[in-house]
Length: 232
Image (cartoon, rainbow, N blue to C red):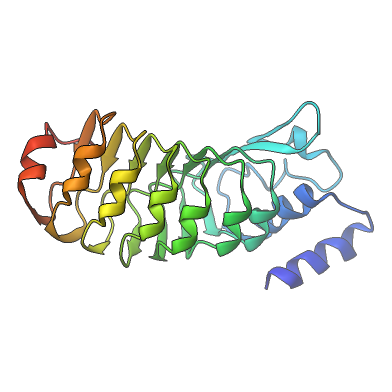
């Protein structure tokens, strides 16, 4: 599907697009509902992506640095081409109705610091590749339909400060690798299907200011020591 979208875009335009423009046009083609016409009329192949709504470019390289499409009532899927936005440091799609699984190609976003996909309808497992986004400082996957287990690769997210996976269908135990995320200030995994004992490695999170693990089936003394309230 993605290959067809790219070929169609090139054929219709007759123009050589940059990698970033192709990636964003693939996203536009993957959106099935844009009730306020935010992208329908503004994201035109004949204009610079730097003038498109929700897009900010790097002044020096002219590459896309931020993509903020939050709370636009958009529906659709996330195409694999977004992984080609290699200068991206902020991706915010929160508060829409995106669905389907996250493309593994997102692991190519080596500069990404902020990722907000909350309040959508994303599903599937949170895969091991999430640990490849080692520059992340903010990661919000809350209020979706994610399932599966917490990947051990989260131990690679050593710069992460905010981690919110609340209100999903994530199961299994909290892996002890979470203790390696020493910059973490907020850890929220409330309303999932987690079970077992809270790993003692949570006590390594000396920067922790807020933690919410409520509405799971967790137990252990570490839980009692750190839980000061419900963070939502």
